Each structure stands twice: as C-alpha cells, then as structure tokens.
Image (cartoon, rainbow, N blue to C red; front, side, top):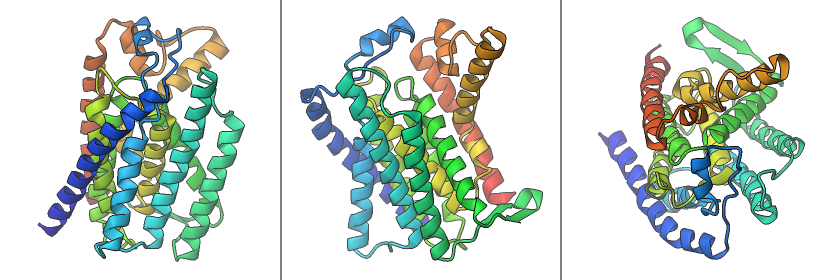
Length: 330
C-alpha cells in the first residue's frame, strides 16, 4: 500500500503543478509569439493550427524537476547516480529540443538544428550517461532473461545507450503529429515503466526511478488538459525529445530495453511506417501509405483526428499491458 500511496502522491503533485505551469506559461508563449509553423504538405485540416504556441514541453519538464528537488530537500528521496542520470538525460534532451524549437520559431520554418548537430549533442549525452553509470558500479551487460541472454558488452554498451536514446527520442518525436497523441502514448509507456521500476528492487535507486516516472506521468496528464484536441499548446521538440530520453533511460537503467518494443509499440510502428515510406519512394518510386507516419495515413483516409488518437491510445495501452507482463513476470 505504501508503494501505491507514493505513486499516487507523485502523480497528483505532477498533475497539479503542471496545471499551474500551463496557466502561467501558455499566455507567456502567446505573448512572445512562439507559434508553430505548420507545413502545407500535411493534411489541410492542420493549417488552422498554424501559430499555436509551441515549446509546451516546459509545462511538464519544469514541474517534474521541481518536484524531485523538493522531495530531495524534504528527505523523501535520495539523489543516487541512477536518478542523476535520468534527470540529466531528461533535461539535456529537453534543452536540445528547446534550441531546435527556438530556431524553428525564429526563422519561421521546420528545419531547426541539422541532423549532424543533433547527433553530436546526442552522442555527448550518451557519453555522460555511460561515464556516470560505469563509475558508479553499473554493469555493461545486455540482459534478456526470457531468452537466457546475458552478454557483457564492455565499452560497446556506450554505443548501445546512444542507439536506444536516439531511436526512442526520434520515435516519440515522429509520433508528435496530432493533438494529444505523443503525450497520451507517453503517459501509458512511462506509467508501465514506473510499475516495472517498482518491481526492480535489485537496482540502485529503483524507488526514485519509479517516483520520477509517476511524477512525470502526472505532469504530462496536466499538460494534456491543454494539448488534447483542439490543442491550445504543442509540446514541440522540447517535450518530445525530453520524453523519449526519459523513456529510454528508464528502460536502460531497469534492464528492460527489449520491453520498449512492446511498451512503446505504437512509437515503433509510427517510426517503421516512416522508414518504409522513405525506402519505398526512394528505391521503388511508389508509396506504401497515403502519407507517413501512420497517423497521417489515417487522416488521408478521412478519419477524424480525435478518433485516430483514441485508437492509437488504446493500442498503446494494450501493448503496454503486455509489456508489463513480459517485463515483470517473464
């Protein structure tokens, strides 16, 4: 019952503070004219969203970090190496996304940082992750207990961290195309990993990792009050990269990286649909989907945005439940 109480408290704190943050930040973003530039290549229904405030990821990033600091000052949690890694990656990817969003807003386009620049910064983040992790007794083994795999990767584990971080952050970013879609899917995925973290008692700081997850879930729910259709604010790369970074980090720290394929199944499907479309066009000069990623394909079929989001949320929830069963019992 204590675990449940801590989880609910963390979720509630995140939710309330993010609501307060939204009430404060959204008018500021509007005043600063930090608006999203919507491409004409997307479904015409999206054009009315042009100018909607972006960089809304601050609404759940700031409360989450603030709550964790307050809990530390109260003596409720400890700042161990794993929690420091998690908070660092969350903030670092949020900062990277913020710079990307700022450039897009400044030049009124969707280019932002170059792919090479992003990769350089992501490599640095992964390197810091690896150094802190290894210097504090973290093992560099890839463990998949259900398959009997326990491989020592050595320094290659650093590359593995980079690949998981890059893959997950890009997947969440690609899915951020409809009101509430990426936020809702992130709630489901991070909630699932919060449950898994509570059961990973052999891991340093497992309680802190779980509490962070539930606080973040609450903060995202508060953000969704303003982000569901019709969205009053977008999370931007500030939010999507931070969420992807946190999700990947929790998966790595809890040694449940493979579970990401299930728990983040919709993110994976969205990314695959984009990759398949690109390959099909470049190699065969044909389209597999009317538009990619997959949520835009459904839009072209005439589906309402809210119906697509609800379908993807339900599929995400179902896959997350399977992922919890796999991650906890198998």
